[in-house]
Image (cartoon, rainbow, N blue to C red; front, side, top):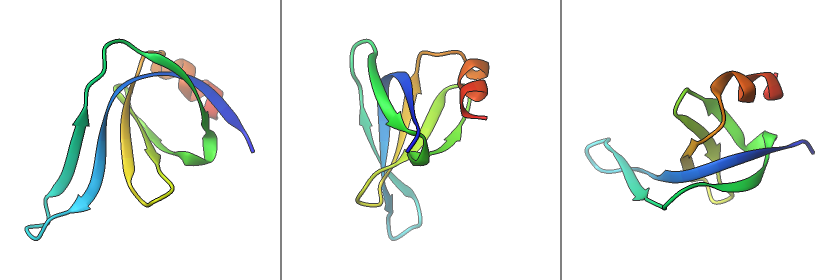
Amino acid sequence: MKFIELTLGSCMISHGYDADNKEVLEHVTVKGFSKKIVSVSRIKSVSEKYILTDYLDGRWIYWEYKEDFDTVKKTLV
């Protein structure tokens, strides 16, 4: 299993969709960033602002990250 070290901050947790098909998001705001080791297999998408990961129970988590987009891209490709 391959891992990547990331500096992650606040996140949004997707809990699925409501009856009107609108995404149910929980916003978690933290001060600053923390280094974390993340399994590459959990990473589903990377944008300039967020890294989207899945979680064991089927939720999706959009993490803010501190690294440069191109640096993360080169590490993953």
